[in-house]
Figure (cartoon, rainbow, N blue to C red):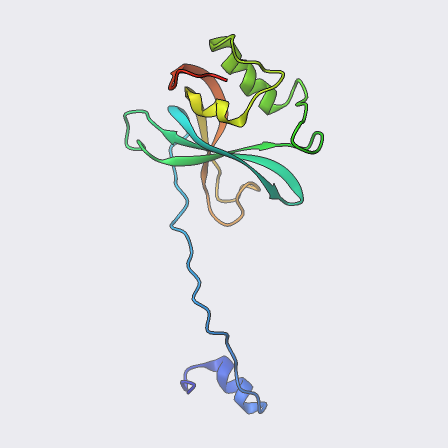
Amino acid sequence: MLERTDVAGRMLEGLGMVPAFDDLIISTPEALPLVESGKYEAHCVSCRKEKRFRRDVLVLKFKITSQCQYFGTILDAYINLDFGRGNSRKAPTRSKLASWLRVIARFDPAVDTAKFRLSTFGNYLFLVRVETSEEDSTQSACEPCSRVTQILDVIGRLSGDAR
């Protein structure tokens, strides 16, 4: 039954129509994590290739390990994969991916930047830059959010195998 306060329902009844709604239960995630912009220690807990807006994108998830109020917060980082197709791609020299791999290679020269596995990111502890979008930013039209925008340095190795 429609409540008398349901304006849309009363308008539809006046036209001889009965409102119909699918009985779906939809859950939404909690609010996006907000972290103050700055430099933090973090390690990469996952790296996956996804399709976003008809483009291939690497989505990396970093867990903040700095001893601060944001300890344990997980933030995303995005890298466009607009170059090449398939499982074997060659990153342009000036790409974000190539830049991040050079940071790793400076710390660990054994890492082959010409050919590597995405799991390489999980082997190191990084110093990362976190930025928070503003409410009116084009990055996040709905609400502000924080993300890792840059790997600044490698602080240490987390596992014995760097390949």
